[in-house]
Length: 266
Ligand SMILES: [Mg+2]
Image 1 (cartoon, rainbow, N blue to C red):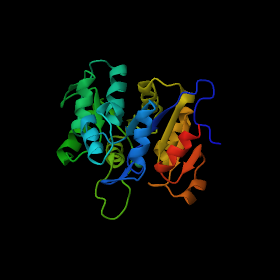
Image 2: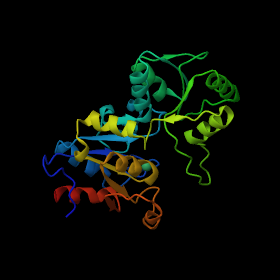
Image 3: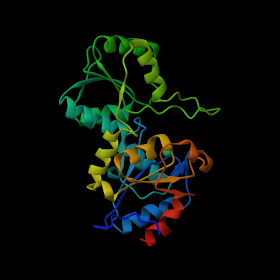
């Protein structure tokens, strides 16, 4: 039998990736709503974890509700929130120049940062459609002048025809090449975001279970922290690719729909 709960406390909670786990594009994955309802009904704590720093938690909760998920903004934790929280712990009341959009800007304000477009403490990069050559030039000048380069995440684009967003990883690569400065990234798989999310749920390491579809972020992040990890095959990873990785998930499921039976067996 698969043991998910901590054997001493019997307590457990979930960190859940979203895209490829509970929905694909605008379609919810069958069984996802039932799984979330089961968690709510049984008071099992959970938090959706996303590297996308563009939307606010309100935006994400709204989008999830539209496809049938009964969640609130308190169930969402983004790389923008982790980044803002981390920078506030490093330099309370610091300043940032932002290459990104609403979710990132709001998170920085919420944690007491000011926006500065001349000589900020940090140049913070996330998802968005605001990038221009003028902004790139400004950022390069700031970084060479001493502003620290912070990435909300380093995710590449999925590199499939029709997917035109370059990904935050690509923007960071450009700034790194131009300045010779290496970015510091806070999003998954960084232990910073993985740990903040666990603490948000009030769980111990042995009680925390990460479910995701991407080996390089969700599973690596969970494995690095000592959490139990569950890879679902409805997203970016195929079963035959698992042997390419030096680390492996605790459990592989075909879809999130498998989780209810697994939970009932605990
Ligand atoms: Mg995913």
